[in-house]
Image (cartoon, rainbow, N blue to C red; front, side, top):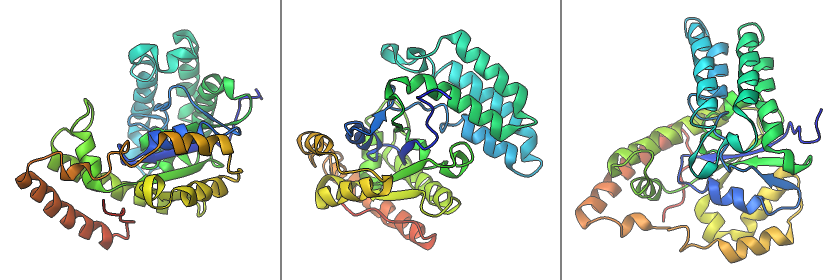
Length: 296
């Protein structure tokens, strides 16, 4: 097995716009970890992706009948949008199209009879290339969907550890509407945050206990900075690295995290609508036992 083959990666995720990128960069400065480049590999957790295809294959009939189509879409996406991304980023940095085609063909050939093994082989073959500079260190990926499909990823990387980041949904929604991807209307964005928060909670509950750590972004950037990083390192079984902590101190702040942005980004009428809807969505999430983020 190549030195870069790691079976216990660190996967960071959340609802999107919740802090997975910044935590990935913090951990990337730890001497025992390696942040992937690109920071979000996407082909495993995004939909369509390997995890969703495997989850479809393992579900009961008739959903399992759609699994082969899902697997083909996962391969197409890996060879397309996840392969060639802006600024020459994506999987193209580490594999040729021919290499990825060969990996994808073998995966599709085996998927019907050996779905778990075929999926593991695809994921590991690609990640051996992407994480080659890690030289055996654990690699870290910050694809936000990691936390929302962590139950589907578990069969692929049974020993992986997942850090799920939660954040005030009003700030998440406000951040989304400024991006060129995701929901672009504030109340629709807030409803999407609710849906993703519920899915993340369900995924975490379906996993083996102790595999997932939930961190509140507000604690990480403001209330309990050092305590949060200490808890993360303890969860991962690594020391608190001084170099990592220096980078964290110099580059992560409340201002840069845009905490409370939803209060100033919109007119008073819209702000009131955001707050009213958020209250209703939080009430519903509480009924399902979903951890509620600290309020900004």
